[in-house]
Length: 151
Image (tube, rainbow, N blue to C red):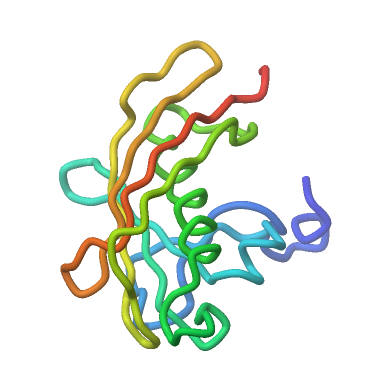
């Protein structure tokens, strides 16, 4: 039980419905302090069972050229990898590798969404790949390997 649960409040870590009407039906993962600072990021389960992740580009995400910063894209890609891995049973762990190819810009105010797939899930390693888009345009192709914590 977390501190928030002990006093009858919401848990400090875990999924919670998005409070922003722009993201109605989406979930936010509460309690990752870096993602809370870098995002907010959201995800939802699509009707076909796949996972879709999203965020809106804010002023804090913009680089000196006026477009979405590559570091923000990679941070969101890492979030998306973990959301995509939830379909394999999720759990905690660490990112072993994260690769990204920047293929186009995203701009202030645009909604960025990511989809992808689990390529292979073994006992402790999960291999994934995904695609990030803004306004229907590809902005990044990414892949990664996650290592699940032992249960």
